[in-house]
Image 1 (tube, rainbow over the protein chains, first blue to last red):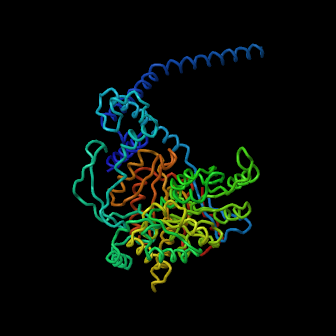
Image 2 (image 1 turned 120 degrees about the vertical axis):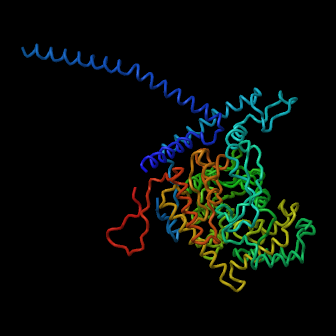
Image 3 (image 1 turned 30 degrees about the vertical axis):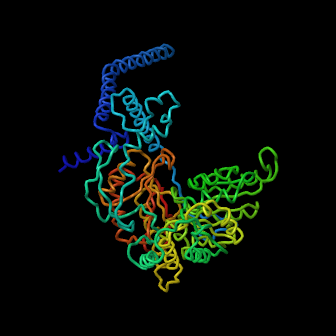
Length: 80
Length: 518
C-alpha cells in the first residue's frame, strides 16, 4: 500500500513537471529530444560535481587551516 | 482585498473587487514554459522550411516567396506552434440548445490537432459553464419558444430589407418601445448584431475633432468603432478613476494637439461588466467626473443587462443611479435574453438622429421576427408583465448562484479575478500547458468550460472563464465545484495565498473579527 501511494505521488510529480515545462503538449519525438537534452545536462553537471568538488573542498579546507595556524603562531609569539 | 470605497458617499453598497497578484514563482515558471515552447517552435519552423517535416499550415505560393513575407510575425508564429497544440479546446461543435446542460459532438485528432474527425458519438448532458446564458432563457420549450414559433408562422424568418427601406416591422416598433420602458430612457433603437451596434454607431456619434477616452480593456467592437470614427483616442487604465480624471483635465486644459482649440466632444467609453476580468465599472465615480468636466458617457452593458441589479435592469440600477445620467446606453440581447442583436437607448433626439445617420440602420438587415418575439417575451418575463414571478425569481437565483460559486472557489484557494457580484468568474491558470490540460480534463468529467489564452489576455495571464446562469441548480454547481477542485488538485491550480476562513453560520462573537488570514 505504501509503495502504491509512493508510486502515485511520483507519477503526480512527473505530471507536474510535464505541465510546467510544457512537455505535456509535445509530440513523442519532441518529448524524447527534450528529455534526452535535460538528462544529458543533468548527467554532465553531476559528473563535473563528482570530479571537481572534493578537490576544491579539500584545497579550501587546507587553505583555511594554514591561515588559522599562521594566526595561532603569531598570537603565541606575541604572548611569549 | 475587501475594502469599502468612501468617495463622498457615492457608493450605497460595498464595492468588493479583487485582482490578486501573480505569485512570483508561477510567473517565472510560466515564462520557462513559454520559453521551451518557443524553442521547439523555432525547431519545427526550421524543419518545415527545410522540408524535413510536412508543412500543414498556410504558406505563400512558390511564386510569391520573394514578396514581403506574410506569415513571419509573432501572431502567426504563436498560431502555428502554440495554438495548434491546444486547439481542441475551442470551436467544439454542440448539437443541442446551450442551456444549463448541453450535448457535444465528440471529435478526435490523429495528427495533433491539424485535422479533426468525428467519432459519431454525442456526449450528452455536459454541464455548461461557458455559455452567456445568465438568466437561463436559452430554452427549447416554454413561453418564449411558443411565442417565437407563433410569430415565425406569421411573419416567416427573413426580413429581406434594411430598417430604412422595407424592413421596419411593427414588431420592431413594439420592441423599441418595450426596451425604452425597460431601461427607463426616452427612446431606444434595436439592431441586428451586437458587434455591429458598437462598431457602426460610434462613428455616427463622434468624428474628427472629438476625443474618445476608452478603458484599457474595452471589447474589440468598441475599439473598432472608435478607430473607424476618426476621433483621437486616449486610453485610461482599467477602472482607474485617477487616470481618467488626469486625462480629462489634460484634455480640457490643453485642447486639441496642434491648434489648441477645445475638443468638439469628449466621449467616455466604458463597459458594465468586463467579460475577461469579471470587474464592474465604477459608475458613480465616472458619472461624477463626466458631470464635472462636461463630457458624454457611452455605457456598453452587453454582459450586465439582465444580470445585475435587483430587477435585472443592469449596472445603473445596481448602483442606484438614474438612467438619465448616462448619455448613450448600449446593450445586447445575446446574453441575458437568449436572442441576438443589440440596442441603443437614450434621449429622443439622439435616437432619432441615429435612425437616420447610423450605418447599421441604413445598410444592415433588421432583426428577424422570431428573434424579436423572443426578446419581447423574455423582457416582459423579467419585468414581471406576463403575470408571473418567474423573471424576478431568475434574477435572484443568478445573484445567489454568483455569490455561492465565487465564495466556494475562493475558499478552495483558486485565484479568482473580479467583483464579487459579477456572474463572469475568471479562474487563473497562467501556464500554457495547463490551458489545454484544464479544458481536456474538465471535458472528461462532463463539464464544458471556456479557456482563454494569449491574444485575448496578456501572455502570462491565461484563465478559464465560467459564466453562471440562473438555470444552474445548486446540485449542478456542487458537482461542478467538486470536479473543479479535483482538477485543481491534479493540475496544482490553487495558487492563492489569501485563505478565506469559511463562513460558519454562527452569530458574531468577540473571537471572530478577521475574515482573511494571510
